Amino acid sequence: MDWLIGAAGAAAVAGAAYWKESLSKSGAIAALVMGTIYYGAGNMLWFGILLLFFITSTLLSRFRSARKADLEKSYAKTGRRDAGQVLANGGIGMLLCLIHYWSPGEVWIWLFIGVMAAVTADTWATEVGSLSRKPPRSILSGKVLPAGTSGGVSWLGSAAAALGGLIIGLGAYAFAAVAGMAPHLAAYSLAGLAGGLVGAFTDSYLGATVQLMYRCQVCRKEVEVPNHCGAATVRARGWSAMNNDAVNMISSLLGGAAAWAVGLLIAG
Image 1 (cartoon, helix red, strand yellow):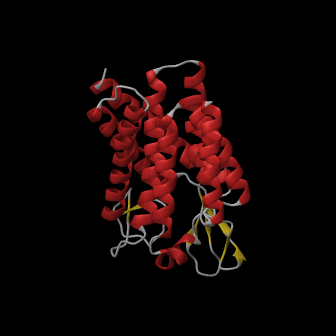
Image 2: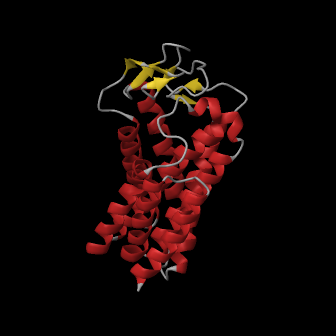
Image 3: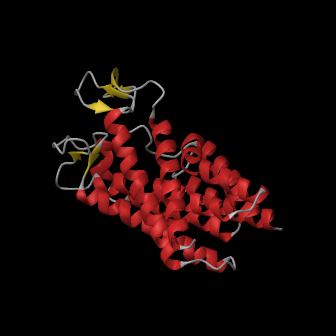
């Protein structure tokens, strides 16, 4: 029965997102499969956090979208989310959900909270930070960088990352209570906050050091995409294997580890 409920709920959300052009066809299919697993193999805790991430991130991506349109052309993941983007954000969480289904353990829940806090914080930092009136600064040197540069951080973006992680922690507490669990408010909240901040700042650090970046031959900006301003870009720096998806995966895993550490420290 749980699998049917999960499928119905996921179909409704994925269908609405496809209709609103937040998901492509492949993205909607991936979201349907993912949502079904999150509820069928998990419970409202897992499914609810996935929804919380997706809904808040979608709303933020539409907030003042015209003002962010030019910057988004430099990012690898923008526009309607396809299957790859859906899996990049929720795939690790889905794997943790399945592992917990096969071999239940609280460690998987802590890791999940941290992973989802990390992807949420990173998304919130990008969407809100790009609206900052002050230019970002390098996470390495503190020097002012052009808006949209990987490895740049701002106070507004950092605050958004912290809030995004905290929201996931508070959401996890609420959804766990609905699922009949006995969550620890302080532990869940701080786990989300820690996972979000560690994930977001790891993403920025990797973006400033080893992420594969390109140089636009038209506007001369450093971008994440192989095509910009209607022309092919050239490789500027970074490791070939360290694309945006690899950076996100590493950041998410470290965010999960941070949340687990907090959970062990506070809740035991």
